[in-house]
Image (cartoon, rainbow, N blue to C red; front, side):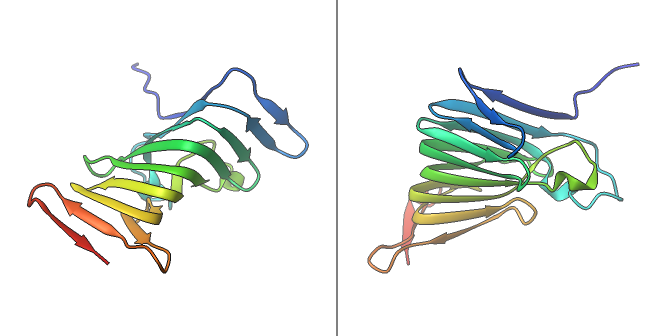
Length: 168
């Protein structure tokens, strides 16, 4: 019988500060996190839309709150998310990223990304478009981004296929 890897959580870092009682993990410098959920489609599972592979890199530090299913990554952050349902990768580059993960209180050991909130000079590569904004939110279940800018700034969308850009 062939064995298939369905779920993976891998944190690459030199020194981790783990507080089991508070359920926190801190990586006070540069690091890498891979979150993969490649379980087959299951009609009984509510989280199948969020399944896929996410690779995070950061230069400043990472704080993971395990009980809240939330990680905050700082400085020169890049995340690439490949949903299981489509053959496209969403990329976010920013200064601060807050990543939200599936609720593990249901007893399911698999973990996947549900939402990403990027801030600080954000670049997104999304479905053939390039987006620049102050903040971008990505929702995995909808496979969509929402971009916003401060009052004095703009959101810029560039379509390299049409060599055109739009600002709002």
